Image (cartoon, rainbow, N blue to C red; front, side, top):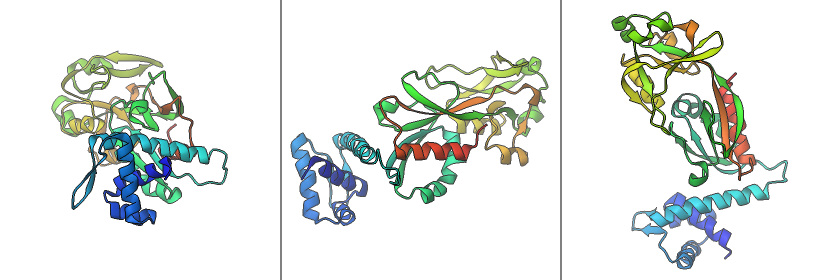
Length: 296
């Protein structure tokens, strides 16, 4: 059995967590599946799967091998479809998304994505950290804000308008600021960078020029969902993209403050490694994200 076929069998066993289910999916005799995995383990000199009477799970070495062979198989699929204009995108796309964007805009629309691309599967990471695309084998990531990754290729898909918001409870306790001059008398929920650990300053546009103010804060977070939760709890004001907040504003759960002093719009980009071409499967996801977000 060739090595690529063996890798496909191993990947299927790992995904199914069962030799029997993998054999059924691949339409192969169970002994063939078992022998293929054992041959890989003998070749590598390590155990890749932990077998019990009830399930099969990956060992530490097995997880490393699974991640690497999944990338190899995806690259082979991309290569085989490189010059095919009619082939439907298929395979696994590994993506990293900003937490709030994933929860509010993208994940609720995934049924539409899979209806359009039934042969694709996604492995989604949703957080506000800056993932190592190359080291973690991630195909692409959506990044909001100014890009600092010089080793990545970026496709700009638009920008998001930002607004200043607060909870009614906060405004009842502290009053409503009208101008930046009043900010020293108010509290913010600070957001700190997962890269530097430093709090981001409060920003506003003054005749097209970005100005910043260091705000007092009781709490600082590195999660966009925690950022919103702290604001709703009345712990301070925040600055967030307006996209997706319309229901909260309409229901009065959040209130826009200082609308004449909004922060600058945030650029939105999809990034991927310079050593990975934008394959049909990744391009399908990138184009879909740009369509769903409809950022200006």
